[in-house]
Image (tube, rainbow, N blue to C red; front, top):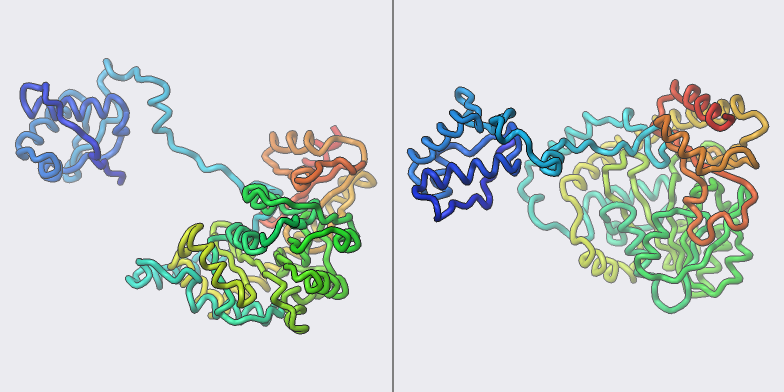
Length: 474
């Protein structure tokens, strides 16, 4: 039940009596729709105390407002703003009326929205129990360690070691408010001179936003469809830092193999530079066994001081988690904590505690195993339906991994027009030029799009692809 906070309710001194002043003040709030229909007013005792009035004065005002149709009285519950105001005050301005419309949340999880996991498969009841376990802990209500919950850092260190061969201890992990903050901190840590940063192109749009916001000069590290990162070009550019998504390049879906990873580590070592490794989609690799992380390979040769490892569990669990993490060289931890302190301070404490238990009690690994099987089925269905409904005109150019497929075609409809027509059918298509922040489509003779299948039910993939094909060919 929504309650009214009287806030700035003021009694006019021009009124002859306090009762008249209170009546006019409350009526003005209601007529001006500053107190919305159906909201509950404070009790007569509460309002009398707040305004230093006698309770009888407040009772008389409430009764008068009720008699004139401004308030409704409910037995045992109190007084509420009436849903139907007196006729002379029904016509209010359109802007006031709009002010109290219920705001419907935008649906960012429609069919084929990239980057959204299967939200219906997440064990919400278990997650709720874990949150409830910690919500009553008074010790978590105050300020917390900027670096993050110690149990969560310990759990992540163990999980990353076993799953991604990351070599670290809890003291080298910094918990962040989402991967976006982790990328921001990583960028600020590597802005050590005037040389530009390298970033994959096409590449992750959110990273480009960070670089542009920080006014960071950057050059494209070209990624070629089906071939991957052009390391020859990388080695020819005067730079000391590079941002890469080596496990499943976003959006082209290529992978850096062991030799390419070792070559990139050597590049960073020789330049005394840094690799920002965004290990995107590393948990969901269907084509081959996942390669060890760049950070883990660098640690084996004693060069992990050149790698900043960025991760998030949003794609594994759910987008609203908003927790990310950094695995840093020891020499960078202090500076990273200073940056985080300036940006946001500590991260949500109860969520961190629940996530630590989710990992330590084995729920994360069980969920990943289940989702890996499901996403593999969905990927196979996507490819099969695209081959069926787009014969000889659209090809999948991304590898069997992650939560999306990348499409390429020559001629036919433009990627922007296809996306707009799909939107009218309630389907999301991400045009390929969204990922080209440096030079949109300048050197492409083909069109492309990214389709996320994570949150699309398996049985809905065929009809949705069939609809897209009809739009494409119309």
